[in-house]
Image 1 (tube, rainbow, N blue to C red):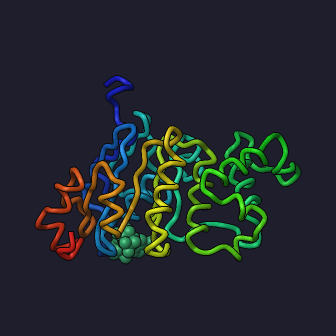
Image 2 (image 1 turned 120 degrees about the vertical axis):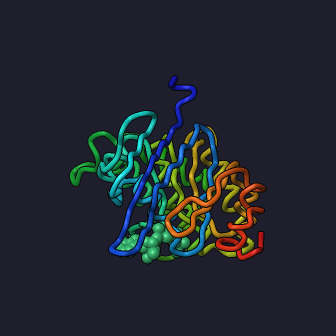
Image 3 (image 1 turned 45 degrees about the vertical axis):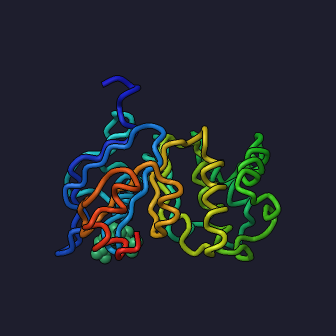
Length: 253
Ligand SMILES: Nc1ncnc2c1ncn2[C@@H]1O[C@H](COP(=O)(O)OP(=O)(O)OP(=O)(O)O)[C@@H](O)[C@H]1O
């Protein structure tokens, strides 16, 4: 397979159980470069388990994961991030006592080969300019000097995603980027995210519950139910699938 035809992400036959709970059963997903893939499924269907296995937060019981043809199965989260898969979280992982810019500086410094050192100034070496550029791309510059504890939930989500971009990832995984964001802010927030990542990490896998967002931003949708993939295709195809209506969208699609 050439580098042009090889998928960015290849996950084959992934399985994961927690005691009697099967969170992933023979999950096979390949993501080509440039795709915006959305994972849908009711609560407990296995979406986050998939994201956690790909990003190293969970080790699959069996199966194989490759990034650009290189095996990454079972590597630690930091090693996988270094190889080019970065993520945001359902609940943003931020230091709430620090300002937005300080959080961004820590993410940028941590992404460098030498990592973050206690003795070095995180703002040195042009990191401050890059931090402000990333904050600006997400419309967060006015918040740069505010502690995260004073930022509304939607802005924290955007900051968490901006921090995931600090490494210039090959593949970006976003776990529920619009959860906790008000109904009016969801579309503007997704517009910001898609615009900010375009040209940088154009291959995106995102988990989403809002079917309007799914329709508006995904090229392809995969529906999970009980740890299995039950439908895979275009948004129209998947959202009109009878099983998906029954188990995922409650007939709302
Ligand atoms: N660390 C864990 N320990 C025990 N059970 C877990 C763990 N993580 C996930 N599970 C279980 O695995 C199943 C799949 O969970 P997962 O979080 O992947 O679902 P999800 O589709 O992301 O759901 P949600 O939309 O609610 O986030 C659920 O039954 C969940 O309770």
